[in-house]
Length: 328
Length: 264
Image 1: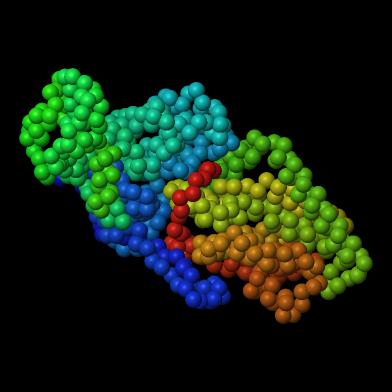
Image 2 (image 1 turned 45 degrees about the vertical axis):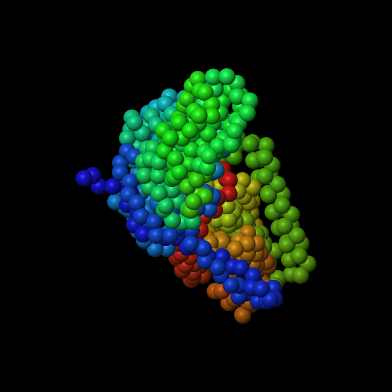
C-alpha cells in the first residue's frame, strides 16, 4: 500500500482572546482581562495520497483555513501531529516550502506594481531556480495558463479572473508536489471559474500534483475533487468520495414530470411527497426516501398526472452540502 | 546563508524597481525627507550656538549626531523597511506569506518593503558625516572610527527595531504600542548629547538603548575611543540576539488572520 503524502493525526488548534468581565471597571478589564478559548480545530485525522484531488469544505468558521495553515506551517498545532511529505510543517517549514504551493483566494502573493513575469521571476529566485529554469517555467506557465495577453501588464491592472490564474501559476513555478488552495474561485465569474478549474485539473493530470482545496463553491467540489472532507465546528464529519456525498447525507430524490396536457390543478400529495415546482408544463416533486421508495412514489404520482416525460434525479450538490451543514 | 543574502538583495532590488515605477512619488519622498532633516539640524545648531558647549558637545558634534541618527533610520527603513510594517502584517494576517517562503522569515519580512523617503535620510546622513569630517578636521583614525560608528549605529538600530516591532506578535492594538515603543526608543537618540548624564545615561544605554544609535558613536569618534566602539558592538550584538529570539517566539504566538491583502 502506498504511503500517504499527508498524514494528519488528532490535530487540534485552540485560540484564546480577551473578553471584558461583566461588572468590572475598564482598568481591571484593561490589565486583567478574562481570556476565552475557542477550539478552532478539534482532534481531526486524515491521510492524503499523491495525486488526489481533495475538497475540504465547511461553513464559515468551521476550521478549514486553520487546518490548511497548520498543514503549511503557518500555525503551530495546539495538539496532534501533521506530516506533509514526511516533514513536520511547524519545524521543517522552510524545507517543506520547496515542495508545496499555496494560493489564498483573498490574498495576493504577486508584486502589484510590476509586470506579472517579474512576479514569476521573483518566486523563481525565491525557490533558488536557475535563470534558465525560471525562463523555462515562466514560458510553460504563461502558455498553460494562457497569460500571454497580460503577462507584461502590472499586476494591479489585471482583472480578478486574470489575477487568480496568475496566482495559481506563480504558486506552481517550483513544480510543487502538493498545492493548497484556500477559496481560489472566490469572487470569480462563471467563465473565470471554469477556466481555473480546467487548469487545475490539467496540472493534476499532467504533473500528478496533489490538490487540497477549500471552497464554498459547489462547482469547484463537483468538477474538481474526487474526494470531499467536511469539517464543521472544528470536527471532521465526513470524508468520502464526492460522488457518495449525496447518498450518505440526503435521503431524498426528485421526480420531474412533464404532463401530457397542461396541468391546471395540483392536488394535495400524500405525506412524504412534496411539490418543489408546480407549473403547467413541469411538475417537480421531492420524495422523502424514509417514507417512499422511488417506484412506489412514481406510481403514486402517475395516479395524479398523466406524464409525457419523466426524470428522476438526486439532490444537487448545493442542497447536499447545505443538508450536511444543517445536520451538524 | 549565501542563498538567503542573494535573495534578500534581489528582493531589495525588485522593490526598488517597483517603487521607481511610481517615479514622481519616489523622488518627492526622497527630497521631502532631505528638507525635513535639514530643517531639524539647523534648529539644533542654532540652539547649540545660543547655549554654547554642554557636556563637551559643540554645534559641530550636533551635525554628526543628527547625521548618525538619520543614517541609521534611513539605512534600516530603506533596505529593511518591512520591519516597521510588521504590526500591520501581523494584524492583517499577511505575515503568512513570509512563513510560506523557503527563506528566513525575518530577512524575508524585512526586505519585503522599502520606505522610499528613508533614502533621503541616507543621503542626508552621509552628507552630514562628510561635513562633520571636514569641519572637525578629522584625521585618518577618526575618519575610520566615524565610518565604524555609522555601521555600528545602523546595526544597533536594526537590532533594537526587530525587538520593538516584534512586540506586535504578543500585544493587540499593535500599531499603537509598537509605534509608541519606537518613538520612546528613537526620539532620545536625536537629543543633544550633553543632556544625558549619570542615571539618565545608564537608562538610555542599557534599558532603552537609544544612545547606541548616534550619541555613543559621536563620542567614540570625538574621543578616539575604541572601547566605546567595542561597547556599542557588544551591546548591539546582545540586542540583536534578544530581538531575534523575541521574533521567533512571536512566530509561535502568531495567529494569522483573513484580511484581504496584496503581496511583495
